[in-house]
Amino acid sequence: MPQRSAIILWLLLAATLSVDAVVFSWMASEPYPDPLYAVVTFDALILGQLSVVCIWSTITVTTNLWVRLAPIVAVVTAALLTATLVDEPVMLSSSFTNHLAYYGLHVALLVTSIWLLQRTEFWRRRSGASREWQYSIAHLLIAMTVVAVLAAAMRNSVFFSEDRWINIAFACSSVGLTVAVVSLWSLSWHWLLRLAGALGFAVLLGFAFALALVVASNDRLAPNLSLIVGAHYLLQVIVLSIWLGCGPILPVAQFARFG
Image (cartoon, rainbow, N blue to C red; front, side):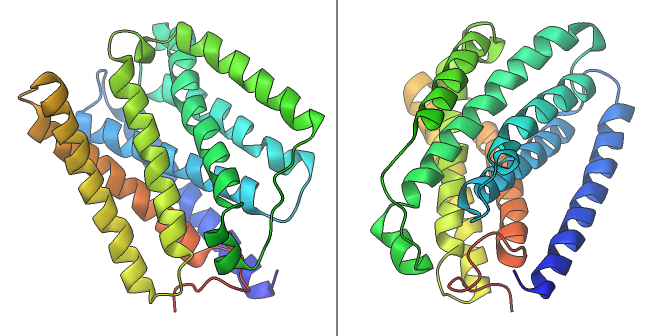
């Protein structure tokens, strides 16, 4: 990796930690229950950064145990932070389980999706890298462990009780959004076109999510929900675009960046 990429990586990391510190302090200072706009901002920031960790862990050519375990560490950290800063302190244990299931499902689906994307003809053309359709016993054991833990967490999570299909659909839509952003930033277009495409996809996805709610449940609050979900998607896209456009995550040799 070139020296310039290493410098940009550390600058991005410092900027990300600074933004995190501001948002976390903001959340900690708000009385319970937190304002909706604060919760949306906090959750979108966490989800976007989890996606960045998953993309880096899956795409990077550095293959060691710590890199592969990074998404798991990130999920546990995100669940603990959310349980501490968003929900009431007396609900820490149950809130941790709820968010562990929520973030864990997102990460599991995203890692699987990126793994599949890397083995498509599109990825081979854009990156010049060829990945084989193979797995080891270690992969199988890790997958079985993750599925078992997620199943237990989801069974005890309020996110997957009464409104479980809405939450599952939202988790899948966030994964689809992330895969679309990765695909767009892998193109050789000008960075403004790639950024516009990613933001436009987020807006369309927000409207589609609201429309699906109207058709499925005739929910009159769907238009308001589309604004909330759309803002959530847009914040995720901003986090992802900054890291994918400026950071050394996508293969440098083939993918164009900001410039």
